[in-house]
Length: 430
Ligand SMILES: Cc1cc2nc3c(=O)[nH]c(=O)nc-3n(C[C@H](O)[C@H](O)[C@H](O)COP(=O)(O)O)c2cc1C
Image (cartoon, rainbow, N blue to C red; front, side):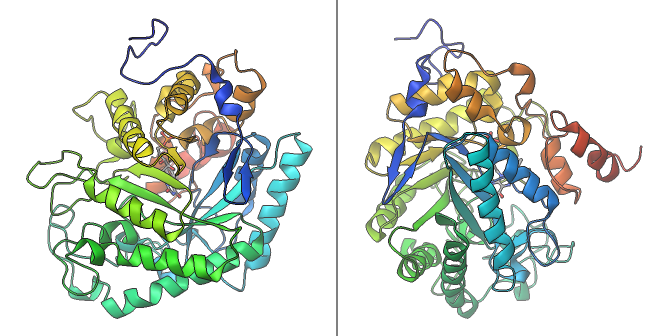
């Protein structure tokens, strides 16, 4: 029956009792103090050596004081050629000290702010076709995709099986470094059509990493296995996983064969079964591609194009499919994405989703940029709504900044820092 207070009618879950968001969650040997997550949000503000820069420190300090139970630290490259921009974080043996300091700073800041200690998961990435280590494209692709390439890229851009064979070891090495720095876990990133995610749809690739389901998922499963084997059992090995790309077969994962862009979760379900059997105890669920179909990835009010769907339907696609998976895997906690568009209505939707068994945690990306203490506000006073004037307005300016090569943050709600950067990179002094 429709909840009369639900402004979305019954389109989205809704509960005004948001105490559920305060409940801790056990992941193996670790306890997450509440159900709110700062999603990975790349600021493109590291140093050229891959260390966190001053704006990186500032961002994680704000997240730490903000009260979220879990901070999923942004895309961090595992090799220099895999960086999406020259300022992307890159964890390697020469800069472990600065990542360790970042972790210590987060712990100290949360403590001083009177917040529970958040868990920290580092997202380890290979940027694949979006690699730009020197500021211009140096794509490393799983296969040529006519939906993306007007002209096929030269075969030198296609990563070889031998190169892929070496990546699980690199992921495991990054996991080990992350554990030494004090992170609570590592994410073997497999989303948004970066390399690991692109391989999931490599139906037409030949060799050990293409064609069959086992081949397409090989890199992810072998990397997860290598990371688990190389780290102590208390360390969380997880993945941020695209369960739907939004591109037609044979160019998309989680789509129905012959069904245009219709969702089909049968392969994602097989993959999650496999990951769970390997020992994965937490997954972060996401969709789409931020470059080609960003409305699937981060439903927005204004952006590069006007999609032919209501953005609320985009949020519903993410939440409904996360819920199908959560109900299918009730013992595997899943994190839902894409809630920032809902602004001050996000907490009751998150609470309704979790109370109904549709996810274990609610993740906030753009909201974390705009309103880094959203969690503190929700948890301190569950009966008081979020301050609408501080919420993300889903204007896509943070993405514009990133695409223009600037440092990313909220141009509207953190304008002192990011408006000048927006003027410099996007408006180019206009
Ligand atoms: C500027 C920007 C940077 C992002 N960086 C990352 C990242 O490093 N890793 C990742 O998995 N997703 C990244 N995302 C995607 C977000 O984590 C999130 O999935 C998306 O914004 C939708 O969630 P939201 O509605 O809460 O913002 C980024 C998004 C934006 C706009």
